Amino acid sequence: LQIALQHPNWRSYFEKIKTQNRVGNPILKKFKYVGHTSPTSLRYLKVLTDLVKIFGNLDNFTIAEIGAGFGGQAHAITSNFNINKYLIFDLPEVNWLINRFLINFIDTNNYEFIDGRNDLKLDQNFDLVISNYAFSELNRETQEKYLHNVLLKSQRGYITWNELSFRSLNGFSKKELINIIPNSFMIPEEPLTYPNNEIIVWEPTL
Image (cartoon, rainbow, N blue to C red):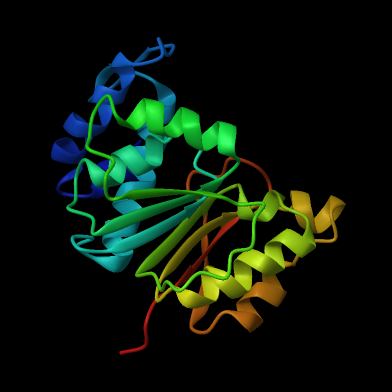
């Protein structure tokens, strides 16, 4: 929370993010500075402030998200910025849930929900791709599909990486990904949610 609060616009961002607490009856806890909210919504605030600090204004971006949970991070971004298009890659049942969640708050006409099991050879480039603990939990074959058809087609990226796939599913190591993705580098995950987690970031060269 303290890290998110370092961003000057955190309060206005969070005023929109916390509206998601009205849906799904999440467990709310009391936090200093923000009052009662779900801990998950604070995580979305933290990621959003990271994105803005690293990449600047997200208005008019075309964004891809790999593994979007119930849609909370997508809501956090699109409720605060005027996104051109938002593509979500997940299983059909999950995409259905995400759409049901999002329509409580925003018009989803500029969203596209894609079954991540299908051929991902899309005629589409992205301004930003994000994935929090999802890309790094896929097997290597699926990672390769996303790598070539989504990650390498995006000017910018923010991938919260853990070791699950690397340790158990023959997935890419973070060193391999850094060598493959142009202009990419690692930043610490703060706060650290599990040992050896890091964030892979890339952006266009100046």
